[in-house]
Amino acid sequence: DADVTQTPRNRITKTGKRIMLECSQTKGHDRMYWYRQDPGLGLRLIYYSFDVKDINKGEISDGYSVSRQAQAKFSLSLESAIPNQTALYFCATSGASSGGLNTGELFFGEGSRLTVL
Amino acid sequence: ILNVEQSPQSLHVQEGDSTNFTCSFPSSNFYALHWYRWETAKSPEALFVMTLNGDEKKKGRISATLNTKEGYSYLYIKGSQPEDSATYLCALNTGGFKTIFGAGTRLFVKA
Image (cartoon, rainbow over all chains, first blue to last red; front, top):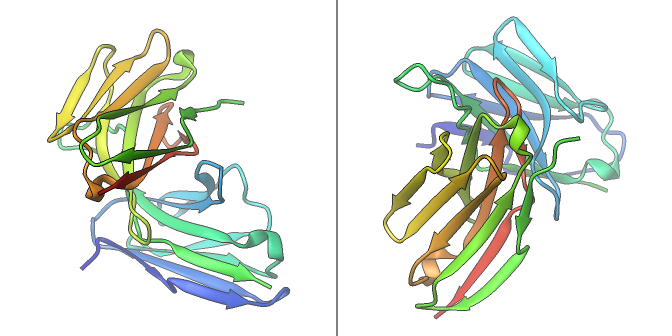
């Protein structure tokens, strides 16, 4: 089983609909992230969370919200989806290495492809 | 605005060819550099995490070098195989949560 699981893997929806993408992890990491991938661009950070009580905006948070329901769960919501939110969304986790040095290595889910018509 | 540049955007090679890609980053913001391998419909997975200037890392036929003073890293694949076909992502970690990704180099290896 994957350490970082995203659901749904694919979703087609209409403009104005509310969408939730869910992420769960078994790695025991405190840090969780949501990224967006668009063709020709690098992954861009939407939101990140360092623990259950900590939520932070990334570089492209407008139009999105998140919820950290537990250490292992981090969901991304689009309150009113629009076509330019059509993209591949990745959840990721990170944690300190065994030596205590956190180099920020990310562990990704397999992605959720969202199409907004 | 910090930018991580990868070149080329895509590359088509024959099986057995050796190849290399480049990642350029602002050297003043360096904390760690990551290379990820991303196969279509799968999770990106870390190949290398590099932290020291002059670092060279190797995993099988794939190796990477790092120059933090001039702000670049090279990824080499020796004797490419069809299973090496993937997108290779370079990411600069500037400390803490902040990781900036390049757009990737997409490699196609033809048998």
